Length: 443
Image (tube, rainbow, N blue to C red; front, side):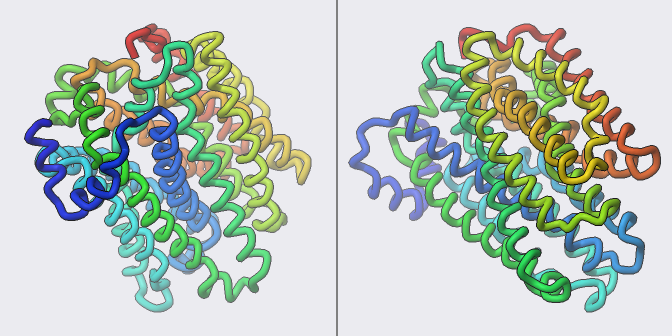
């Protein structure tokens, strides 16, 4: 075992975990998959709890001195800060990983994520502290972004590298299940509070409970993931697959082209991600007379459809190839962008059709987006390169999507939001044409 791994096993927490699981003689793909799903579901639950509050709560709580549209735009501006901070978090936590080990890094990152999330639950409003409310919200959001940069545990790459060659598409979709699962729980939780509380009670205290739940889920996820990454068996598996942290500068020097192309290859699915989750809620809440609880339930139903199509993406990718699936769904998303956003003005039926079609495309495309990231890197740089590429893909494809889509649609109509989605599809097709090694047989 390397010196780095020894450092990683030196803390009391890791020693306890090692002793507790010393009876585990083997590790298997199924166990890795469970760890991946737990980690990604907790991450996305945090994400959606904050995203929903950005529409239903923060404009009124933090920005009550402006109209509802402007307040939501300000709220989406703060929402984007996490995506700007995430690459910085990766730089910081990769250094911690190299110095103290993967377990220490993961513990600090998830503690920061949980602390930043639960701090939002205690956020005072503008009526109590004035402009400091927005400053505190921005600070907590940056903390979440830094933590998300450090939350990368490499289990998704480990899963891909240990998957059978003929089932790589199937195993590539497993990490992506966390997104629809996290949305289903977050939307359902908010729908319950919105439907059963008065507007005054919801804005006063009801909205805070999902953030406490997010903190609790983070604690469970921390121990579930530490159980795996700090055991000697997994440490050896990481080493044998060369999944060790490298410096960001060195990674960019050797793999910079792959980082850039890898960030743009899944752009269509990342842009669609917010176009069927965060943006529709803001449009319906601001520009229709529909209640938010009803639409949150529609979103939860759409997410259930997304779970099914994420599973389907694995089977399809193994039959036709991951690159072909990503290219085909990018073309379908481009077609979708030309007519689907207008369905949000079509009442219950139109909204339901939009969400179902959107989540079908999202599941098929997003289900393989993680596989399109790790497959480009040499073994030495795969661990850090995959983390950086994921950060850049979220920043370019999703970080500003709700803000840009709301700005465009509020000024030029829903067709303009479709134009933004179309640009993501075009970027994906260009990136895929520049790199034809998505289905690299060595990954």
